[in-house]
Image (tube, rainbow, N blue to C red; front, top):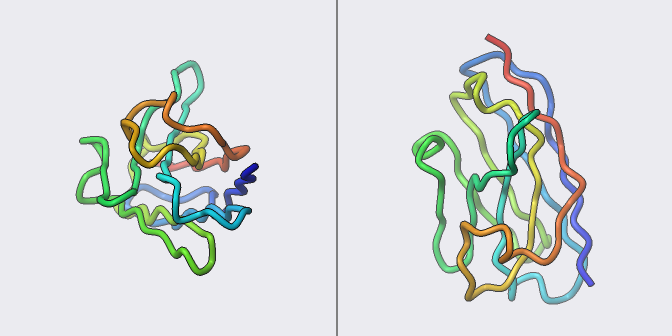
Length: 121
């Protein structure tokens, strides 16, 4: 079993930055693809970024967000720069099968509880 705990969310002005962290339990952290999804009120949960052998991003965050992982600390990060009000959502960390499609929610077997990110204009 894997347990994921997100942290680092908060309220920030447009143009500001936040770094989200996701701490994972277990001894097989390196065998998982790690992803970030987000869900705004009234909308479906959507893919943001993922990392396995490479990093992947949705188009709207390319050039602004950076995903990274530290296997020694069993932690994945999402550095978010140049934040926009449209980025406001609950952000969820997820762990899944490394060979699956990183964009798909079904890829991920384990999910954190989420951390709120609010970007004001």
